[in-house]
Each structure stands twice: as structure tokens, then as C-alpha cells.
Image (cartoon, rainbow over all chains, first blue to last red; front, side, top):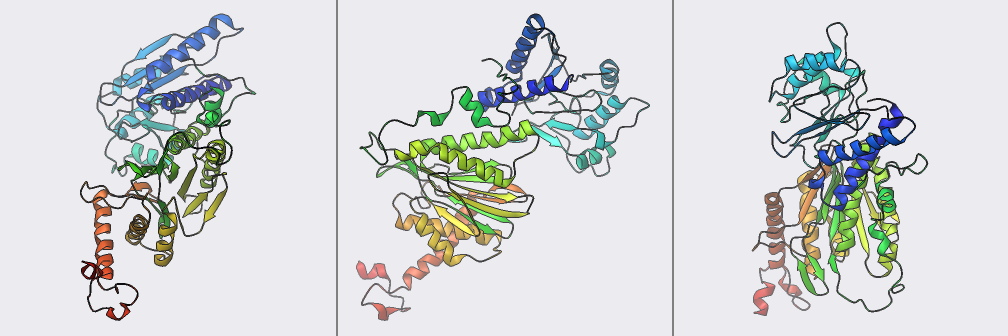
Length: 199
Length: 293
């Protein structure tokens, strides 16, 4: 999240880095930690040497081959990396959202439950939030070649309303509406990219 | 490694080939120099992959390829995969020099995925076909030295709701086929078989069987094309591409299709006259083989 042109450039750079690494070595060698380190180094460098720091925060998430090997890194504008456990929120009202998430969080919950809780945490008590206003994606370790999968509006509606819970819950606990979120806009549960690795 | 950050005017954007080139990793850069068109003896035998085919059916396209790779007259591999998913709704099959061909498939898959990640939506089917055309053209230098790669691209066009097939020549020329195509050294034989058996709006099973039959005929006439290997249990790679996406046909199903094809073929063989002069024996059950033995 942050200043659009800055985070979009960083997002594309991350995608380029991940794809190049997967091409040059193997897709298995693409991981969140090295990408987070590169972001941290670049943003830290800009923070100390340039006219102005980058006004962005980045989230890099990875699903491992097994439960418990997942990673979430939160990189701040000065290059500080925070290794997050379980869930995190970025942007405006991040603390309030995190607080609400902490109350609802349950390990190994299905996607529908995780998404509903995330949407509730995101909107708070007095603000409606329709599926149309959300951008949702999951990193699903059972998704084949690419773990990243966009959850489109129709499916979001279905998951949140619980009307037809035919889809067996996600293997991956969706920590946030978009655990793959690399850049999330404050107002939406925005996800972007897919640099979230596990690509 | 460092984070690839390009200046605003220099950013290659969603073009992964260009990113690869900028970072000095392009596999096509090694071409050039060396012998001219067809010139000079090759210093070594190159591994070649051969017969591949694609046929339209009611719900999309069936793609198939045999499993043999040859180096000169030797069999280099028995289990090569020549039909690959390019992305969720398209597939690419390759014939020609195996090394550059596999590299091209890998780059092509990455290019489509990279575009989608950067742009947020997938390329149109025609866009994908044109991308592949550019990659074949980039290989022209190598093709001139004998390392020709000829892919076959097919996919389900989600916008037009139909299966489409694209073929290529070594210079990158791109042609859309309306019904079917086959390429590689046994391509002619496969094509003839498909031509005789093709009908509009075939079912999935009929499409799979027609491809399998075409590959059998190609293997029967062309030494570089592998037939079904019953001893080792190796069967051609067959895939369907429809609105549901790219799906590999299970090996057991391919084996079963082969069983049906072989049953009809052997009864045809049994009932066939033994050659010129034996034309009177039609349908008498006089086997060609028993006459020779």
C-alpha cells in the first residue's frame, strides 16, 4: 500500500525478480524471504540516499509445501522487515483491523470463515463493505503450478454470505482477505501481483 | 541477485522475453555466426522430437504427441513429453530440435504467466499465438544452422467460446487452422489419417481416438515416431483443451483408445489382400502374414 506509482513499480520488480529466479534456477527456489530481503535492501537504500523515502509498505507472503511452513513478511518504508505470524493488516486503521482479526482468528479455518472474518475486521462495526468493493486472492498450496488464485466477485459473495458453501474450505488459512497481498490499498482488501511466491 | 528496477522509460513491462534479454539471459542470443543456411557438417547429432497433432472437437481441441526423441538414427528418449500446458486454457506441442524446443516452451509458459501477473489479466488467445510466433522467429538463427523448432499451439478462446489451432513455420510464420493439423517428421502421415477420419463436432472420445490413430499411423511409417510401448507401458501424451481448461487425458484412457484402434487395425490387416496379384483374396480371411511365413 502507499503511493501508487511507487508500489506498482516495486510490485512489477518483484514479479520480474521472481520469474527470472524461477527461470534461471527452479520455481522451487523462489521464496518469500529472499524477495523480502531484496525489497528491504532497496527501500532501505532509497531511505538513506535519496531525496525522499518510498511511501510504501509491502506484504510478501508464501505458502510452503506443508502447513506451518508459510511465511508473511511486512516491509516498512525504511526497509525494516517484520516477520508476521498468523495474520497482518496494512494501511489506514491497521491497528484496529489487526485487533479485530486477533479476536476472530482461528487456526486451520476454512476459506469461507477466514474471508468472512477478514471482511468483518476490515469494515469494522459501522461501515458496509460489499463484495464489489473487495479484491480477494488466496495462496493455495494445492493449486498446482501457481499457488496464487484470484477469488472473483461471484465466489466472494458466495463465501461471505455462506449461501452455498459447496467449496470445501481452503487448505490454506487465508490470514487476510489477500494473504498474497503484496500491495494492499487501505480502503480495500486489495491484493495484487502474485509475487507472493509459491508461484 | 538484486531487485530488477528499471527506469520509467526503460521498463520492459509485461514482456518477460525482454526482461530476460536485458539481464543477458536470453537463450536465443547464442545463435548467429557459424555455418550459413544448411551449411557445414553438424558437429554432433541433435536430439529431435517428432510427431504432434491437434484436432478440433465439439468442446475444444485435442492435442497429442508421441513420446520418442531421436538423435540421428538412435532413440535418445522413450518418454519425452511434447505436449505442454502453456497456461490454463492453452497448450503447446513441439517438434524439432529438442533442446531449443523445450527452452522455448519454458519461456513461453513464463511469458504468458508473467504478462498475467504484471497486467492483471491474461493475453487473448491470438495474443498468445503471436507471442509464440515472435519466439520462433527469434530462433531463426539457430534454425538456419539446423536447430529448427516448429511448435503447434492450440487453445480455447474464452471470448469466442471455441477451440482454435495455430501452426508455425521455422521463420515464425503463423497460420490458423480451422480443423486440425499435425507436424513433425510423421506429420504428413498423421495429417492424412486425421483428414480421412475428421468430422465436425466430434465427441471428446472420438477426438482422442482419432489422434491416437493418427499417431499410430505416423509411427507405422516414420522411424522417428514412437508407437505405443506396451512392454514399458508408455503411451502418447494426449490432452484436451476446453472451457474447463487444459486437461491431460489419463494414460489408462489413452491405452484403452489404443486398444480399440489396434483391434480395428488388425481386423483390417487380416482381411486385406496380400499384395499385387493376390487381389482375389479379399475377405477370405487369408492373412498377409501367414502367406509370408
